[in-house]
Amino acid sequence: MRFLLLLLISIHLSWALPQFAREYKTSCFACHTNIPMLNDVGERFLRNGFRFSEGDKATLKEFIEGKTEYEPFGMMAGFNYSDKDADRKLTGKIKLYFAGTANKYLSFFGSTKQNINTNNKNAPKLFEEGSSTAYINIAFQEPQHLLRAGLLAPFTQLGNIQRAFSDNGLHGIPSGARGRDMYKSPLQRAGIGNFKGAEYSYLYNNKLLFLVSYGETVAHGDNNHGGMQGNGYGQGNGYGQGNGYGQGNGYGQGNGRPTSGNYGNGNKKRLLVKNRPSQRPTHNQQPNQHSSGDDEQFLGGLRYFFDNGWKVGLLYSAKEEKGIDTNSILLPIEKGFGDWYLTSILVYSDNDRKGEYKGIENSILYRLKRNHFLRGIINYGLDDNDDSETGYSLMYSTILNDFAMLHLIGSYAEALNGEDDTQFKISFNLFF
Image (tube, rainbow, N blue to C red; front, side):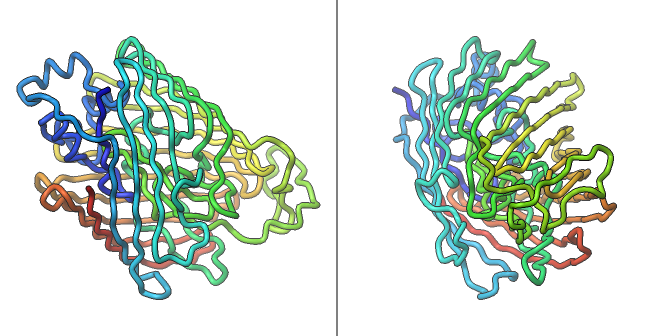
């Protein structure tokens, strides 16, 4: 059995893997022109079950000198500092993972993580569903067909959506007097989360990708309503503890948003009235969060690869969790311009509790030098009461001697309730 060591450099970000490069004795930039964004080679590597396709092997043969066997286990350790932490203390994190390929068709991946020195009762803990992934890949007629089954996170096969927006430093601002109406990004508002189930994707003529997935939602903490799981946003309260995939596609664990408190007594039902946003329930008139219905999620999507390098997708998500329905439509757009990489996503979401929402999220990544990067985030959203929210983030990252990574993040956000604040974060990670 040939094992691949999948070392995630950071829980917060999706970055290149020096260990993967050593596995094939090639450069990280074979798969990442702009780290952490996967280029076409990297996307095929991920889609083929963590293998280079035969065509890419021929293209990269002068760079790939051979393979070195590694044990299939890995570990990452790091710490964070935020000026929004009430105690001004350092928080730590660890992550364990296991991955490999059994044969030409079958591969597997598992990961679990835990936060250290935090008072957040919803923070990730080792070997819990909400902080872990575990799935198998079955790839055949590469790269046409791919089936994944197990404990999954969405978006992995749908481009650089999560890689572009993970760890934007917007978590925790503005704080809000009661932890309510905190800033959430448009992608968080879509409410797409981790699930236990299966996913099938088909790539036609290397141009059109079709994907469909279905499964039971995975709860994160006590307030998991319409949150963004697996998007690299949160470490509790229902807003994501994303999970790693393939070549540096770990999806973060900071930047989650607690949900608004006070979900009502569960005894009043919302009357569904079309085209009447004003009839949506107040915080004290919520759908029964303990509904006996199944917690389930469906995701379907298309992605088209244009000859000029543009990649455009169309996604639809339907999710029911604890009696609350969220339906979302997303339009992601990507394009690389040499040292620049643009990712933009339009979001429309209709949530039983929060109503309709429209937003756009933009990421611009620039490679300063080989191991130095800048990324800017610009977000804008509007709810059905015409209240707006904005978020801005600037991040500098550097890779240190192929075994450590440093991130410096400054951010500003204004929530729907008009509160605004800033945050400065430092993240430092070691991998083994």
